[in-house]
Structures are given as structure tokens and as C-alpha cells.
Length: 258
Image 1 (tube, one colour):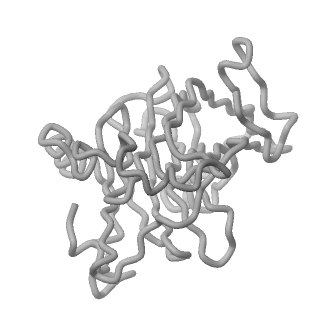
Image 2 (cartoon, one colour; image 1 turned 180 degrees about the vertical axis):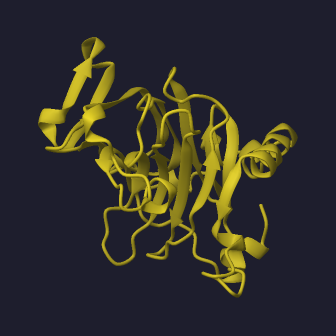
């Protein structure tokens, strides 16, 4: 696999001849790994099996990050653990030109610890779409024409981490990690990316013939749009767009719709 360990190397294990990776969180450390290359536009997918049972206070993350300090671009999946029997929550966030605070949360409609499921990020000049098993759960459109920043100039690496965040992750930090349940294990496999590697051909990112820039990917298909509405109507638990305590004035990208 074209990955490097970023931290906690004693807590990462390669399985199945390197085709799968096990991440371990205990009281000593969490861990993380990252792609060896950065990419500018494309689609990245990972199959992940999350921590079973009581996973409150843990965060398993899969995200893209430009690794720049002040004008960071980042596209996040963060899987927030929960008490046994409660649904897993996936939090997504979008940073564009250093501006984040765009959290949305969706309760998953299946047990993500029972089997591997595919989580994907599509990123092109028109939009960013977060997918769970081909169901879009979030769309962030390019609304630069309305003065809204969109990540398009900085390549991003692909990162995965497992860490302790019980100060906020589960019910706003009410539910703490039960270390008697450690070690906590999550699994990753079938990493797949089709995109423009950086360093690579300079013209790749602007090539309109890349499949992910095609007409079919300029907006959601009718089936995808229906699934997207289903998720948002039935499984969305938090949307910064409707949080009047944080944003008395609705953020402009929220008004622009999907």
C-alpha cells in the first residue's frame, strides 16, 4: 500500500499481506497513517470497519488535508463512537482556504462495526460529495461566483487516524472512554484513489477529460439526489447551517443549496 505511518507506529498492524490495516487505540497511544502522495481533484475511497461495542469517546477518521497551516483545505469524515447499542455518528466537515466550522452529523443506518463499508470523497471543480456506500450524505458545491471559498488550488494528502476525543466526541463530551474496553480496534482496506498526483503532470488537474470532471459528476444524479434527501430527512442530527446559536445569519453557502 502506498502509505506511511504518521504517528503511533507500534499501534498499526498490516494484515492480509499488507492489504488491510488495523489501527489500535489504548491508554498509551492512538495512531495514524497517510498516503505517500498528495492529489488535486479525483475520488478517494476506503473500506472501513469501525470499533464494535462500547466505542464512546473514540474517533476514527478518514480525511483529506492540504497540510498547510493558515490556509488549510480539508475534507473530513470523523466517525464518533458511542455507547453499546446507540447508532454511530459520522461527522463531516469542509475547510476551504482556512475556514472550517462547517460540521454536519448523520447517524449511520447500519452497524458500521459488523462489516466493512465504503466511504468515499469525490472532489472536482464543481463540488465535493461525501458518500457512504454510494449514498451521498453531503454536498459542498463550488459557489466561488458568490464569493464563497472552494478548495481547488492546493493538493491534499489522504489521512486516517484513530484517537481519543472524549472531551467532545460522544454527546458533546458527556460520555467518556471506558478504558476497560481497550484496546479499541478499527480496520481499513481497499484504499482506492483516482486523481491527479502531485508532484505529477502539471496539466492533469485542469484536464476536463478526467472522468471525475465529466457531465455525470457536475451534479447528483436523480437517484443520488433522492438518496441524499432521504439521508437528510431521516438521519441528519446536526447541521451548522441551521444552528442559529452559532450562526444567527445563515452562512451564504447554506443558502446556495445542494
